[in-house]
Amino acid sequence: MSTFQSLRRIASNYLFTGSDMIVRPLVASAPDGRILSIEQYDQADRLPGVEFYAGLLAPGMVNAHCHLELSCLRGAIPEGGGFTAFARAMGEVRSRFEPAQREAAIDGADARMWVDGIQAVGDVSNGEESFPIKARSRLSYRTFAEVFGLKRHSAKAQLPLLDNPRTSLTPHAVYSVQDALFRSLCAEGEAPLSIHFMESPVESELFQQRGELWEWYAQTGLTCDFLHYGSPARRIVESIPSDRSVILVHDCCVTQQDIDLIMEHFTAPVWWCLCPCSNHYISRLRPPVELLRRNGLRICLGTDSLASNTSLSLLEEIRQLPEVPLLESLEWATRNGAKALGLEEVGEVAVGKRPGLILFSGLDYRTMSLTRDSRLTRIS
Image (cartoon, rainbow, N blue to C red; front, top):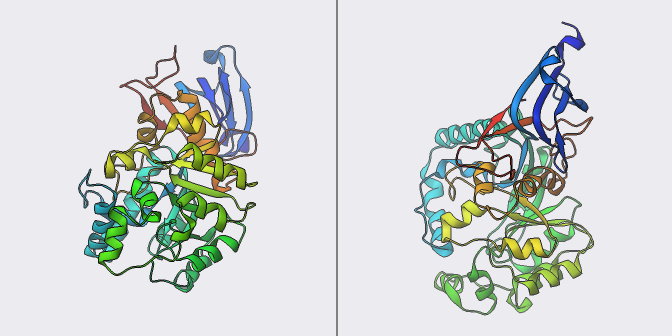
């Protein structure tokens, strides 16, 4: 078969490139998915060899925060118990599943994300078990080898994970890593950091030596040597070099004061990753979306894990943000996610990139918004 015959020419009513809208788009792509050209057509029915799809074409989406290795925990922790109860339960349920069960769940979750239009993932890993599946996946993975535990004083256990491609170290959160280790992790390397941040009020309360997290630590004999920072945001800016890019994940309890402190410190991009379905699952909290938008912050989207979500679908995350115009939330879920993870080939329909193509149908095209009947289909 000739190269010409192997090309795909795909047309639709609309194309969202990741940043711009094109009406009557005609996209040509190579067999490997690389975009060769983007044009506009006059009459689609007069274009021989063109596949026409009614709806809105878009690049495959980027799940900027996921814990693929926790996929076996779907439904293992009840909803709505709050952050501290969820954290306690995680320690109890993680060891209940056999390796074969964990592998099957990881494999199934990876395959489902592809069907659900996800092209790339920022995945958090604590061990090796997800890497064989990621190595053969159709998805592009950027892995954060996560270090956590108040009794841990080095990242030695995580170093073997760095033998895997596109993998770097990151501290878990401002409340779960002691001071010297947290600072060393943030100071070394050039890859972005991915840090759970202000997911619950208990994080700020810990620094005031009160609240459920403080009480839990006290009951179990755990001590924290970082409370002198006074707040999670203050710990971030005093521990991370200003020229190190960081993804701050969840952000449910972020205030204007936190934003000002963080944005005045960093010269490198700061990405604010929202996982609204997970926040609702755990504690019925919701990120301050309008506050983040009002400040003009760089926002991306994630799903967290199946321990705290019913799916790993970014479409479902977008449905939780009805106040955000669809094209804006799609930019968060495509181009912004790719930029946050440092993945050049995905997130945008542009010549030379391999973003994958998905189709949104059943939209309200007058307002360009989702409806109950909206669906997502993978095209390439």
